[in-house]
Length: 385
Image (cartoon, rainbow, N blue to C red; front, side, top):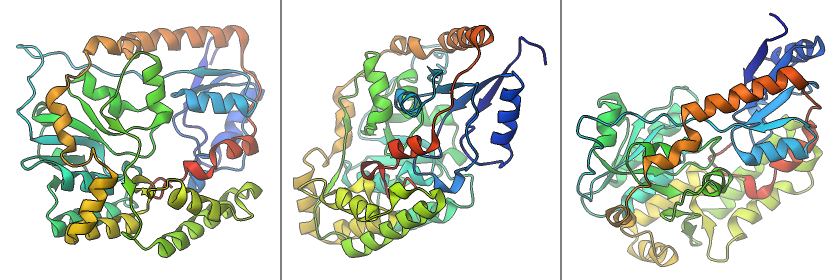
């Protein structure tokens, strides 16, 4: 490798290979130009992939959302770039963009069904959609660790008669699924970039579902609007075993504290997490912050108890027939995605490489400082760890 070489490393904070960070430190110490491109941080409630090896000095960092970029700077990284992902725009067909089918119909959830995609909430929404509507999840998870939970949601949905289909992408062409969808859904509780909010625009569809401030704020700052999204789904008390939920959260937080070996998770932190989830809102917990067991308890109660369903609708007035919003609102024009085009991405990346070759890197972020920024009670989700 010559002096004009940049080594671009994706997701270096995740401990997939214990030798990676020490090897990167050696390369940086030898004067190599390194760009450490963060998609997810292990400090963000991902203790199973956290490495105790220090981050190298003399490198550049790039983050795909401003929240992570700001966190890296606050933790001491002196050279950090905001480098959002590109959004591919499929070319229109011979007759232009396919028209949206008549509603109610299929609301597509185009994801692999891993845990943080919060599939229990997709089941919940299907139960409150209009007659004739359905939710479709495209793919099962690729990892064996996520498969049992995915299968549990499939079984529960069948038990409750919920109008949601799983694995639609196994038997149907992806483009055809999009063309047949009246809108697109996201219920994810954690995203790095947030492609699920932009890809539907590229395909002429509206995005419905959960708003994630960490990523949506970047798009809104660039002029996009998402009035159809919700911030939470309030779960009134009495629909799940709160004591059992508190015990499970305590075990998870205690295990995370042991994995991170960080004192900030000690001294009653697990109780603070439980209190934030259960008492953070006077009306009740946010359904999306519950774990799978608590979500299942809620769904069963809503399915068999008329009073429970009525109380749930009263706490969430926009929930009943939520899919109808797609009837009256047009998707944003594809032209608004110009800042995320592949050409714009290439220009940003080329400029970053040139600057690195001229000026090099900077100081590393402090790992304990990053833990303090991410391991907060309000950032904990039952299906996001």
